[in-house]
Image 1 (spheres, rainbow, N blue to C red):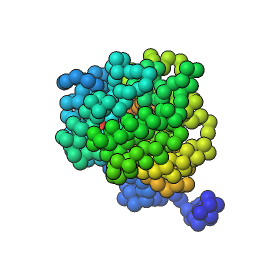
Image 2 (image 1 turned 120 degrees about the vertical axis):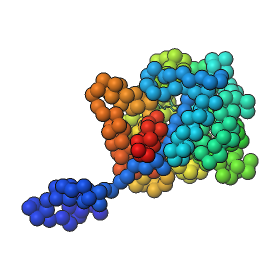
Image 3 (image 1 turned 180 degrees about the horizontal axis):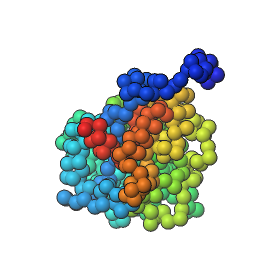
Image 4 (image 1 turned 90 degrees about the vertical axis):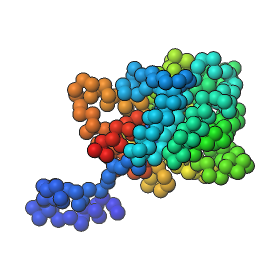
Length: 339
Ligand code: PBG
């Protein structure tokens, strides 16, 4: 329905007084169009080596890097609250970073160990992984670099396929390619089929922008220093573009993605809206580290009410068309919803 037709349905003032329905709590509740639920939440975790370790991330107050035993403890809490899934981001030692990024598919690596331990402890909790080479590359890029400094596509995809297989074989329910190489979803899907991994799902970061909102994440995983002043514009989408995101999503769906993601979140809700309208597939957004840091910093200064702002943000994701939201606030939101 066009806006014109929609407005044509309601009478003019004073017959129409929109405030009548807003006056009372009961009628406000009856006409509420969207709802925030625990079922929409995905909680990210940064995972480190060691035992009994929790290391705070300075630019992300409230977020800690967790050793696998602590990860299990945290995951138990959010599982009890009803959060359906988590995403794991390994923080690797510099010694694990090589030009060929072989650490990405080491079956004894931190990621597969975290996945299998978590699946053993909490079989019903969905475990999603990040498929990209940035934790394993000395330069902090998501792929393999050639001698001119360019991030190579097809060579990178070969490694990503091995990484995705390594995650799925360790028990990951869903892999999340966040690298933005061309053709990787199709190659991962084909490899899964060939290995009989027909239930392994792919959450494609189909519309991932070259955003400066990722700064605190890069601090958390230790990629900021390696990346220096470099940027990811040769593979992530220009923030100026919207049609290009629709083309990326269409390709990933053709290649076999089960769910798509738009990233970052709040500044890109127009992309979420377009995607949901155009493709009508399971759609998620990543409420990223910089968005989280801004809320935390303003709240710490007493400038905003953290809980209200976070809940309003979740509602905005919903209203735009998100079925799911990957957010560092997931644990808090689930707790607040349970109160
Ligand atoms: C890298 C990756 C990034 C994020 C998730 N996976 C950073 C990047 O692309 O440089 C950012 C998430 C956040 O900011 O919370 N594959």
